[in-house]
Figure 1 (cartoon, rainbow over the protein chains, first blue to last red):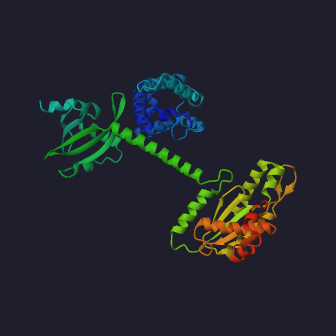
Figure 2: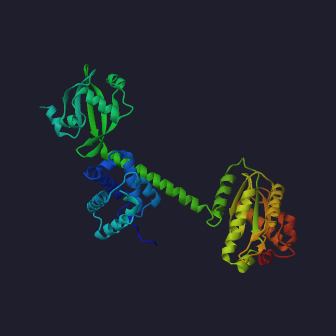
Figure 3: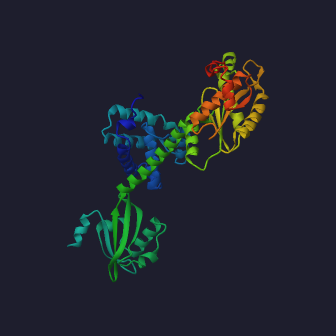
Length: 120
Length: 309
């Protein structure tokens, strides 16, 4: 039997949805990165975050690197902005009783995508 | 004092003049998120809700409230607010804004998740019904297609053909499995390219393929498959040994209703015709008939099965 994904381990969509909800609020609340997210409609932003987080946690769907690079290119995201989003993400994960080890796994996964996202 | 109570609620509430939308009362939250002057209220509605119509506001009466959803900033976060403009009294309207952010988040997230699942289901379904090597339908797909076809009582015609590549084992033994796989892909592509929409083509075993024609009878399918055989057997294939080779196949044909009504029955009879084709020299197309069956009494069917393909 294949090992259980983080997506399954933490309850699938039942956990994913509030995680997306909090992440959505938190990025819009950030002085550093809110300007990036504000012009994106709630519908699109939630859709994007749901797809991205589900795939990243080993759930259904796929997120290929080319798509990730293309989607972020126009924002010219800087190192500071990247660090801000990663720390928001970790903070949100901490609110969801996700174990430290699993947070490390997710952070490593996100970090591996840094070169695709940070272009500014 | 009574209205002060409204400030404690999460709702945004205002009582406005019916014609100008000038508020005679509004809660603190309403002022902060929507505004307190008629034009700013109208402008906000128009900017945030593209289909907003002032005419619809003026048309509000006891039976016709006007509702729409806005995305508004509340401090730093963004809220989805459902605005309902309803009748208050003869000269005033009541505007109520209800925070439905959580509901909308759930709706959008669920929609997104449902679309991922739908996509995933489609791709799993495709995998389940596709032969991974050749990309054509697999055995499971052939049975599904046939069952769908047979369920419709109006479908009374049709014929089935089993095609088996001749000496396939030798291909593998001589040139290796990679070339064997290549030969299977080449064969599937070549056959697909000459079949019309009347035919459903699947790989049902190792080097065994099946064609289901919806409208042809056994003789018509025999003609078609014989032309396919003529095409295939004359095509040169480059081998890994820098030589050229050719492939041929043997085929057995049965007719729907005449030689069976289930796919298992039809395949079983087509198989008998196929083994007859193999036993009598390969590279030929044989239609099933009971006469053929009688001939095979001289040589038991089990012996046919032992013939090297």
